[in-house]
Image 1 (cartoon, one colour):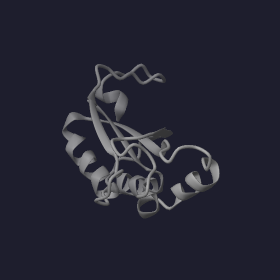
Image 2: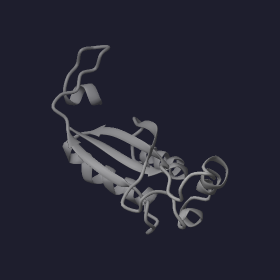
Image 3: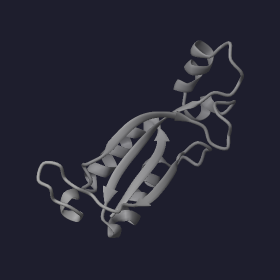
Length: 127
């Protein structure tokens, strides 16, 4: 089993959820996070890729330096090993714009999964 973690733009979450549901992956965890990649934070490209970020610059952080933490969403999904490529491809399809800040995907091995309610382990706990 693998855990797939994807950092994506906030406004891309509905499209990502829809594409997952349509492909038969309804289970998903979503967290609000902030961070920045190699672009260094919110800069001049903000209006082009995420108009909501202009509010962050102009209203909330007007007295701070030019670059700020970027609000993102962290999507987490656990899948069987043979489903990893499909899920990664779905994330890319729903989030790729060709602009800096499209996101990152991390695929991590899971040592064990246990369903609390039944005590099932491994793949049975994920289904």
